[in-house]
Length: 392
Ligand SMILES: [Mn+2]
Image 1 (cartoon, rainbow, N blue to C red):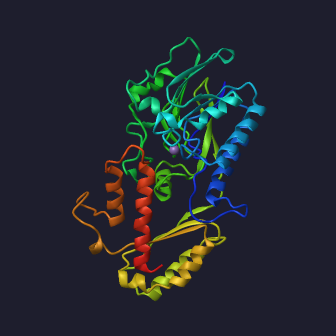
Image 2: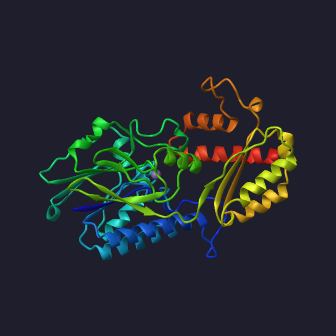
Image 3: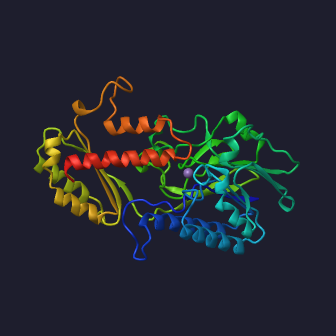
């Protein structure tokens, strides 16, 4: 018996400033394209059941366009696989912060999708000898938690859960998602299940022999560059979903190619160089990309650049590069002496943006605010101040 495991599509997310000719945010269109590709792949693979492990939408109130798009894709899937059980849970992103807001996810019940939006639900599919315990984000956040154990006699026992398995996220949390419920490995009891389908961690990761995060379908987290280095640390490149064989627990990775290349260039060491030399190196690095930077997402770090040198850079050339790329992050970093000291590990001082980021990540917030949005906004403001100081 085959199960398709999808997680964290984050439909409706908007990033950067470019629009498609049809007036849609380009990154939102990229993310929609990845989801369509995944649905195409699921239809072609013809699994016996499908689970979506949370964060279908990036926000509790997605745009009408995102809702219509998701509905059409699920409708396509339902028409192709009319009898397959299809289970959808809410993640931290698509869980309302107050009950009266309600959830858009219930809409998909019209397509015979089994939805768990707030409480844990157990779905049984006798024809497949299958039961699915569906545990959305909210079920792990309030009061008494549901027992994460199979209950019935079914041979195929699947747990779908959105949250952070303790100890699995990398030590450096800069790329991690905020706001997930923490679940211990013992509480999860991976040995008790045929398979545990996890959502929340955007990098594919095996938690136990039969327990996996399948990862997101595109780069939708708050720190794209941290996510790339996290992938490199895990020997993973790119995004996708998993096709699971419930008999032997084996998984097949079904890659979803990124809409556009994401390129982290070799950093420039600016120490001891004047503005003309740094200009030359910036142009050289950006021109070294096969196919150029047009429509791509690119980061170039420049280390140890004093403020006066940064100010003298050729900013009209930089603006030209920025308008060519979909997104160019020219990350100008001051020499060590200008960094905020005295906090963090003795060996390495945090930069001011890092210091601000970690402060905002811990600061108490009113319940109705999204911490992830709050931190992202703070970091954007820091970036714009750095850019202003550099004059770009
Ligand atoms: Mn997510």
